[in-house]
Image 1 (cartoon, each protein chain N blue to C red):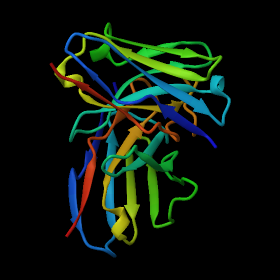
Image 2 (cartoon, each protein chain N blue to C red):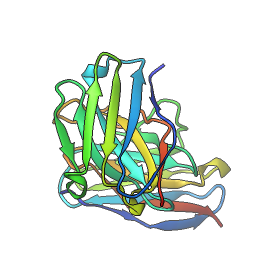
Image 3 (cartoon, each protein chain N blue to C red):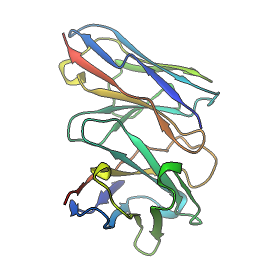
Length: 107
Length: 123
């Protein structure tokens, strides 16, 4: 199974800050990775697909990079609506695996 | 509009079974598969398994092998997930999500999610 190690597990930041979340895969997954935002009581929402492509309708302050085993999600300038939990997901092989999540909180 | 609509909340006793449905619309159902994901209260996302709507092939998470069955009804574009021998730690929100129809990864994987179904297991 491919393990996805996501860091940090929590992050405290202010509106306007730039933040970066990282996922590391235990083996190469090409670019078969997505980033998801989840707010309480809601289904996950895809932000980034194929590691670096922005989902239609998602603000351009979100960006993704990486390939193989190292991936990052960057939010260039945090907005109040961005405070949520973020997950990476690999869909290169079965079983699909998620990162442990990053809870982004307001400082 | 591409969407997945799930069945409503369930309350079950330990040892019982639950069957959750996920109805697809707005796309060709048999061109994709469906993965099921669950989330226990306050916890992260856990992948449960996948079924191809194209040919019915399945792949289940090892920890659920023997307790879970995923099926599809292509005539109604609906996927089902049945979990048996329920325990209290199966209490969770269950989601379906669109996935690839086979082994090859596709960019559309996990782009669309159902709204979630709360399953509570309690005596």
